Length: 389
Ligand SMILES: *Cc1c(COP(=O)(O)O)cnc(C)c1O
Image (cartoon, rainbow, N blue to C red; front, side):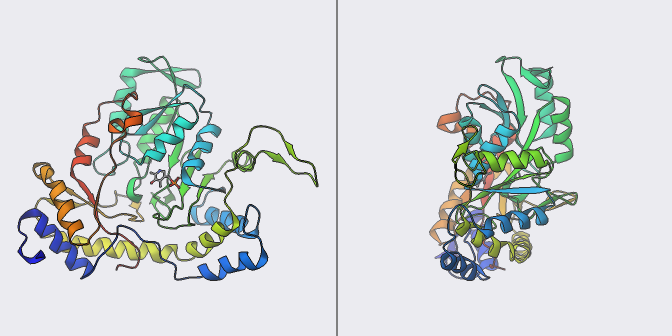
């Protein structure tokens, strides 16, 4: 059956088969081949399964050591981590926060939970992250500096922050984006949910802004079941993040003293135990994903009209999800490729629905989004679990 398919979809399918071999493959599966059972069992035996325990502290220390951030604060998921990071960056109700339209909806939701409004910006076709050149042009025309932030001339609202997202693990152009943030007085909070293990000019993603956030959802490169973390080099912000996400409880031997409305966003010890075991394997996961990418690259070399997304120059990507883009003239074939590959048991997926096409964000303020539109019509993610190569 697969043999007789011709055309682009058929060529893509056979390139994928050449890389993956026979059988079915999901987009991304977790891999538990280290100390996962031992550490989780240890929590159960000790009874420390919940909100306190040594694995949470250990996971935070190891995350900080790995990323080079001064501090890491573990949390219940990546969306909660981003919400808290934005709050600590000074985002308040009615502020606007610049995010890419091409992202997972969690990025936009974290902004909305604070009563703030996502302001959607375009992407760079080589990194898939925010395009700093287009963003600067857009802000020059539509924003004016006002005090310690900018104002959107069209809506009158304060522009408070920008959230670059390192899409599929590929680092954004941080040098360009930091310059825009500085010139327009925007706080920078990086959504590094997908980029644990990715470096821009030797520095870990998520450590360039005031704060950065990670996710350890089941489909991410390292999973804790569910989980997230804030990274920051600012000790004071890290302390505030810890306090705010642990119901703002003051230490006391017996009294319940809460000094503000905090959140119950802490990561349970059970999840952190899983995370500690996973972190021990992170470098192996990355090496495996990089081998898989190289193998896809060889297999796709002869497929015309299709290119694999490569790590940007001067970057080291974790290649969390491998992706191909169809040339513009083949954009109409995306759904056929998705159908043929999924029919064959090879799980492929399109990019997310763009935020300005998603029901909750259709009316969000936005810049022109031609690149995001084009990428969304042409991009396909390939099976990318660690251990496939
Ligand atoms: C996974 C992800 C998140 C959210 O993380 P959760 O842990 O699922 O809440 C946010 N942003 C991006 C870009 C993601 O991929």
